[in-house]
Image (cartoon, rainbow, N blue to C red):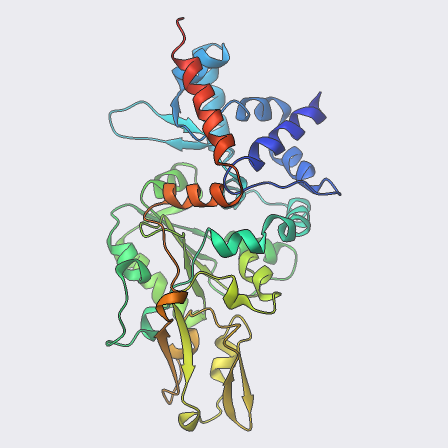
Length: 372
């Protein structure tokens, strides 16, 4: 019975935009058993991408309202489903995809066994072909690398994303925390995951992060550049988060770095160029690059354009100005969805899950409209 419920939950999660593909080893089921009790898994199965009030869910699953509300809140507090709160309105709950979602919400209760299972699962979970067409994150340049004359859209500047929000939180980076717990961490700043808007409210209420001002968020971005961290906001113009990532710990960057051509996978509008005549061979850029896109040949910088993800980290500290950031040709510009709903729709479409999601919503709505 318990084994069946986890298989059903795995299929349920795989039907969501982010996916949760099966493996031969069954590691995905081990992960679910670590995160969900059988009772929690059963309730999580009842939710869809359609946000619902506890009363509607209780009526649909034929369970006492008070009991339903308590169990839903327990799941939300554990980071297993998503809670939406609006002033003056009842709280709503909805299903939550595994990544980006459930996994990130467990930043404060990791253990070595769960981390080991995630390490085993990540290469299967992060499908390169899907990520190329509908990534969940994109790369934008650090502000210090952007020349005045370069045309940059507001959603391509981390500072503008921050200034557009009133509610902001900062949380520990789950990737650096997990690597540290298994003895593979680095000395980059830990508290560096910026969460914006409604997501910030969820992080604060669940004790995953703390509320910060725009000024403090901008200071974190400044520190990210100093520490050599790649800025990766959610793949939407109205981004809900900005990850500050290192190539040694970040699950996404570590996985993409193993690919021979990271530039073909990452969503980025920019690329670094080099004026070899101005290079003095100091090698600072080699240490800053998180994708091993730079090398030295006879004390002059050499670019591997197929590995450059346009983060600008090499540019912002180049002492001679030999490196610069330019916009890619129009034909290579990524299409950035307007908001997270559009981004998830694109992801579901690429994974062939639009029909499944639509049927799930229709089924839910039909139960809600039946006479009591």
